[in-house]
Structure formats: C-alpha cells, structure tokens
Amino acid sequence: MGPKLGKVERYLLERIQGDGAIHMTLLDPERVSPEEAAAIAKEAEEAGTSAIMVGGSTLASTEELDAVILAMREGGLSVPIILFPNNVTGISKHADAIWFMSLLNSTDPYFLIGAQVLGAPLVRRLGLEAIPMGYIIIGYGGAAGIIGRAIPIPYEKPEIAAAYAMAAECMGMRFVYLEAGSGAPRPVPEAMIATVRRAISIPLVVGGGLRDGESVEKAVRAGADIVVTGTAVEKSHRVGDKIRGFISAIKRGIRARLARA
Ligand code: 1GP
Image 1 (cartoon, rainbow, N blue to C red):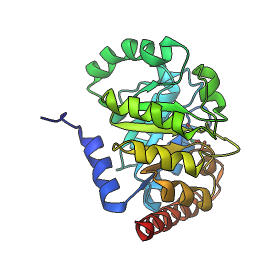
Image 2: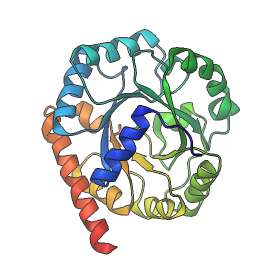
Image 3: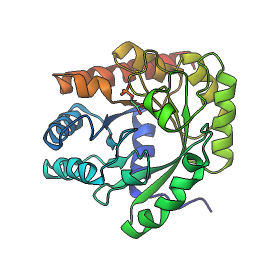
C-alpha cells in the first residue's frame, strides 16, 4: 500500500506525466506587493505555469504572506498555491499545500528537523496538504544557503548531489529540489541534473538562476521534471511572454530528451 497522496501532489504528478516537465512560478512576499503578486500569478497561470510557489529565504511576516496569497485568491486563481517555507513563519492557512521540506545539507539541525517539528502540528491543524521534499543547496546558494547554514555542494561534484538525492528518496521524501539560490549567477549544471536524475525515481525540481529559455531548456533536457523561476518573472515587465518563453523551452527540452532516448 503506497502513501495516500493529496490533491495537489496528484495534480503535479499528472501534469508532469502529461507534459513531460512543468513550470512553477515563485513569488517572494518580501519582493512583490499583494497587488503585484495577484497580477503576476494571473498572467503566469494564463501563460501556462502549473503552480504558484510562495516564500522567500528571509520572510519573517506571516501577515505579508497571508496578504499575498489572499490577493491571488481574490484574483480568481485556479492553479494551486504551494508554500515554500524558510521557517515556521512561512505557513499560511490560505495556501493549498506546503512543500514540507528538510534542508538536507544544512549544518544546523533546526533546518533539518527543528522547524519541521515546530511547524507540523500547525500544518495538521490547518489541514494543509504536506508534500515531503528533500531540499539541497548547490554552488552559489544565495540567501537560502546562508540563512539555512548549508554547505553548498560544489557545481563540479554531481555525485555528492546524487548521494543526497538518493538519501532523500530512501527516507521517503517524494520530491528532490536542487537549489542554486535565488538570483544565482549560474544555475545547477546540466551534468549534475543528469547525474541526480539517473540516481532517483522521484520527481526532480530545479531552480535558482534560471533566467532565460536556454537555461530552462538545458535543465529539462538534463532531466528536471519541474523548473522554478522567481527573479526572472518578478523582474519581467511582460510576465506572460516570459512564461510562454519558458514553457516553449520546456517543450524543446522534452523533445531533445525524447530524441536521445
Ligand atoms: C529560489 O529556486 C528559486 O528559491 C528561484 O530562483 O529567483 O533565481 O529564479 P530565481
């Protein structure tokens, strides 16, 4: 008997199966106002993004988080809103689900299990769907790496990233996220994505520093099932065009993957 999957997780798996790989839009309540978030999310949904992730490495205000999510809801969003928490303050009752994650290469037990212990009773009480995920910081790492006290895995050590990903799968986590850090000058390298992809059978999420179609295509070609973009979308004046560009890149990446198989 397998685990009973929630609605959002089933939806993600179905979309990955149907499209080959999917795009998610990340919005940070410290970088966008509720009004901006609502407008970006709506445009992103119309352009084909599969879900909106909400969170940020230094987010401290649950009020700001709630306001952003409520504004998106009022805008009539139909794709799921998934929390991407940096801490217990990243939990909102207005979301559809939460990436219930452990920062596997943190040196601080708080980010491995401490915050999760504090947050789990609230997640349960609110009835939030928890999607277990192993979170691994790569290379640059950005604010997530510093706040999470990670020892980032060097870009040229894919086998170490694969070992972490295998450990995540062996521990029962159902997604693995390779995170180069928001705004990373260099995204997770293709060779690392490919090595991790071969090492696990659960879906692989890749994010950090993906700012153009070419980097998204490469990530998907190498084996990413979900690509996450935050900065590129937040900074764009034409969100719809930007996301459509990413989705075309995903399709090219899938075609290249299939052609190789
Ligand atoms: C950060 O992976 C995400 O947590 C997104 O990074 O802002 O560089 O797109 P960007």
